[in-house]
Image 1 (cartoon, rainbow, N blue to C red):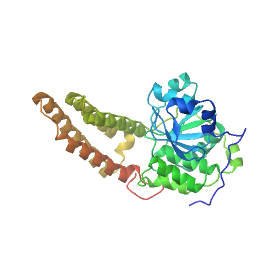
Image 2 (cartoon, one colour; image 1 turned 45 degrees about the vertical axis):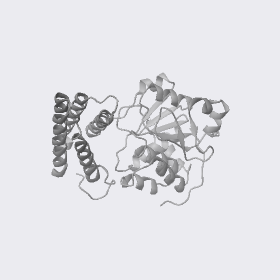
Image 3 (cartoon, one colour; image 1 turned 90 degrees about the vertical axis):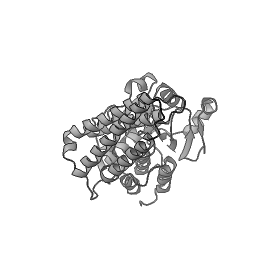
Image 4 (cartoon, rainbow, N blue to C red; image 1 turned 60 degrees about the horizontal axis):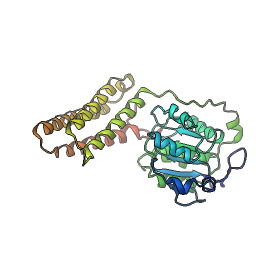
Length: 326
């Protein structure tokens, strides 16, 4: 754990606590936005169209991906000036600009935060227009870790507050690299930040494997929604999503960087393909015979277990640790 760092301030003009600004203009009471512990950041923020929002510091929120216009409109009501993404998905820069905000893209993996990326995150938090909304995909893991470690490295929050951010977000302790990034963070000298000459991009290059995993995650979420729908369950749509997800697995296996992965990775990927092929068949049979597709529940559990096993072995191994990563 790092030594205790006194609560600090961002460079430039004094930062007025964001919750006070919003209360002053009457936005919190009328917009469905509620900071559960005003003046006591880090704290959960209840919103209507954004998930897992946490006020990490007076001028920084973390949370989940803004998925639609309603999400961006809510960010505007929160007063956000810059959206900072650490997700692998390409940011919706056009929609952000439509609502008067800019994007900064600094994608992360689940295995931790490199020294260079930590410097870039701290530089961005210090220099970009505020308030900032920092997000990953679900708002639980990478985004919370980036926000906590970034603020900690600037002296804006204490180690105890940084770990509280992870607890509030529900960061999985299995992501050891993310916890290490927070627990090993230290104050970055202002001189190092001043000399860093970092260029912040709206859209950063993303490795092909990260793009593929982002597509897999989005399709998996869509399949879960279809399968869990009680009022509008349609086995044909479920079959089509199963097919699409299986094709993502196939395309993943064709990537050059994936072909260099250990045999265990390929065994797990092929096992996932087989599970999804069976699920598609079961869904289509259910549609033809007009019978419930109860047996697919086992398939959903199996594919989720397949993902978790692969993540544990290959995605979640901390940077620099020994393990089956190539």
